[in-house]
Amino acid sequence: MARFSSVSPGREFFSSLLKSVHDLQDLQEPYDAEVPDDVNFLTAGVDVQSGGDDGGWFAVKVVGWSHHERARVIGYWELRENPLTTADAWLGLEAFLKRGFRDGDGKVHYIQGAAIDSGGHYTQEVYDFAEKHRRRRWWAVKGRNNAAGKRSDSIWPAKISDNGRVYMIDVDIAKDTLFRRLHGDADARNAVTFPLNALPGAVSMDGHFFEKLTRERKEYVPGGSGYKWTSPRDQEPWDTLVYAYAAVHGLRSLPGGETFKKLTGPAPEDIRRAAENRAKRGGNPRKADAPSPAAQATPAAKPKKKKRRWGVQLG
Image 1 (spheres, rainbow, N blue to C red):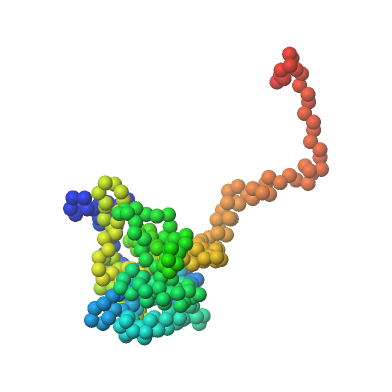
Image 2: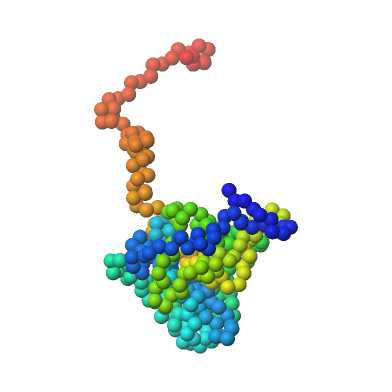
């Protein structure tokens, strides 16, 4: 149960649920390869940073997904080689999203879907980039403008927006879910893990990285209308994780998305074990209900007629 600490009148935070940066670093694991063996597919989240002396840059997180929606962060990169006003910057992003990552058996995994933030100063460029690569399932996304504290029915919209260029996603639901998993039981089957050692070119996941990952806070909305997120600056490690998770929901919404639902649903051994437990408790209901051959061969006895008195059946 969450406990709240009052910060100022009308503002309360989930303080007791927050792990320290030190505790979050315990979520790091030594991966045997670029991609852990239990990963079924990869997604990417891209945060587009505007302006500044360097002309803007891309923050990119690649995440591997396994059963129970277990998130295995592969790495976090900041692509700053070229200003976003140049074609080379977008070619660099394209090359990065096309790269592969190897697992312990040598199999190369490619990014199956990417959600790219289009809410900044480079909206048109993101639209054009996503349109060019729509067959690769690289989508332009933008956070849905919910009323404070409100949530919609799903992270991914039922359809693309009216202009046909951007998917309005409910980042609040995604943040709610990821927050629980980051600050919940580290041994849970849907916990988030991070690599102990950064891949070449990736940002080191040190204390500064985890501080940015947890910079945003959940704030109570006065009047009992729920909770909203504070959206501070410089939280790219968090935003990119949210977008990578949204991309999972984008893949599930596709025709044939059942494949991705199965790959992030219960593991096959869990399904088999559950079926065995049901069979032990009550057997196979279909077989139990089926009549035996002997019973089928023997006609049922006709019920005896009961005497009637004054037109009313007795007994």
